[in-house]
Amino acid sequence: MKFLSPFILFCLVTDLLYSQDAKEIVKRADDKMRGKTSQAEMVIKTTRPTWTREMAVRTWMKGSGYAIILILSPVKDKGTVFLKRKKEVWNWLPTLERSIKLPPSMMSQSWMGTDFTNDDLVKESSVVEDYDHSVLGDTLIFEKDCYIIQMIPKPEAAVVWGKLIVCIDKKDFIELHSRFYDEDGILINTMNAFDIKEMDGRLIPTRLEMIPSDKKNQKTEIFYKKIFFNRPIEDTYFTLDKMRNLN
Image (cartoon, rainbow, N blue to C red; front, top):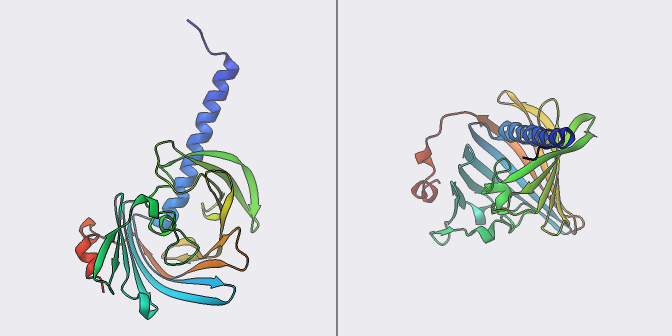
């Protein structure tokens, strides 16, 4: 019988511990913005070289399995709804009075013409369960000590990104900076978090900025106006009937 050398055994144990620590760090940061449930009102501002557009949005989320996003304005998009139930994502278009099930292939496409993808907003994939995590080192962002964590998708995971690098504040577990790469390792988007404030008893970034790497003078910002955590929401709230009649 062959035995592992003490050095190899030490390396294997060390890698396992760092992987577990990295996953726990990501989970704590994800829980920070998610809670058991959350209900939010926000403004999403899309900036292009020659124009800007704002959308008012209301969201309801429960864990990682359920979400509803309702567009309140502008008028032409008012009443549009996105629904997530487990791994299914649906879209209600009031002008057509039609609900559409979004296939996984659409998760990488732009959400409502912004620089966020459908997956970024609706979160079909899970940053905790669909990736392998490792701590790459430390960095300083906005004078805050942060972990640098690499996230590589698991072979069986249906995810949008080929790799993510996220920087998470060591003290408050706030994700302050994220880089999104495609399967070829090319940087696609960079997200930064700003204006950290206490909302409903927890510190969170109240402005998120997504910047595409290959498009100058283009970005999308999310401004949180209100957010409430851990208010009871039944699973039965997240149904197709509710999506169609949410207005």
